[in-house]
Length: 92
Ligand SMILES: [Zn+2]
Picture (tube, rainbow, N blue to C red):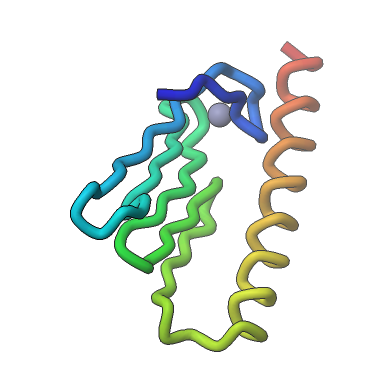
């Protein structure tokens, strides 16, 4: 288990991954922040990305171009969530 930081609220979150020794590869990774709702998980070729009111999932059947588009959108939402979190924190 690896400890990492939430990209939105910078709280420590846990990065878990499962390694399948039968197929000799990581089959699942999971990152979730209970504080702000950030989630990035990958399970058997399916991604689930969530931040704020943004929620998106896609499978390995999605084209590389579309995947890039999804990640671009996800990162934009991450930045937005980070900004509003910082502002909210400073006000309080
Ligand atoms: Zn967070």
